[in-house]
Image 1: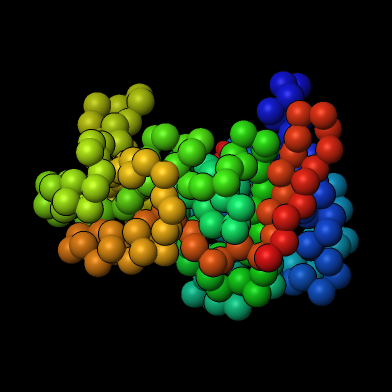
Image 2 (image 1 turned 30 degrees about the horizontal axis):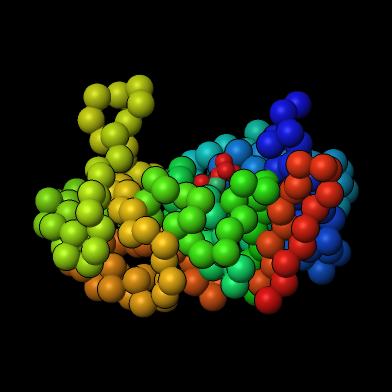
Amino acid sequence: MSSLNDAKRRAAYKAVDENITSESKIIGIGSGSTVVYVIERILQRGNLVNKECIFVPTSFQSRLLIIEGGLNLGDIDQYSKIDVTIDGADEVDENLNAIKGGGACHLREKVVAEAAKKFVIVADYSKKSSTLGEKWKQGVPIEVIPFAYMLVIPSLKRLGCENPVLRMAKSKAGPVISDNGNLIIDAYFGLIKKPKELLEKIKLLTGVVEVGLFVNMTKMAYFGNEDGSVDIKKI
Ligand SMILES: O=C(CO)[C@H](O)[C@H](O)COP(=O)(O)O
């Protein structure tokens, strides 16, 4: 296994071991490659423990992971109070603010994170930074209503992004379509010194559904390191 995948797995395993306790009955499951290891660890706990729990997905991908693992699937409409949500991130700063949405799932991820008493991030060492925008140069993922994307692009330029890019699909002609039927614009703003301010400004643009800036939401982050250790940061 590559050192990056090993780091993801170690972070995910530790986060599951320390945060999914016998009290955790409703559990939010994030999206992305690190979350695959979260499910792997949950399955290792065995059916006897897992059958007492409901798992709420944040995407088509995590819904499938839950179903394929034989876990109890729940929807946010039924379970709007979640004990703990564990998710990955594209970049995490020293205050545990994060950029998310590299997998275009940040709308549902934010809902499931906000519904949780505790939101925990799992990531490898490459995601840790002091200021957002330092490592993740692809830009802040912004989910927009298809009808409005041509309006949102110039608005993002006015907010300081030089080159907002409509995310294009890799194995399909045309744009990435989110699980909610929307488009994704990636907007790089350089170093984001004031993430809350930027989030509020983007959120106010007509046509924007959700912004992949998670500000003041994360309680704990687990970072797998190259040497096999895991750094834990708490707020
Ligand atoms: O926000 C996300 C998806 O929308 C993911 O959590 C984020 O992209 C990190 O993914 P990975 O664990 O594959 O690095």
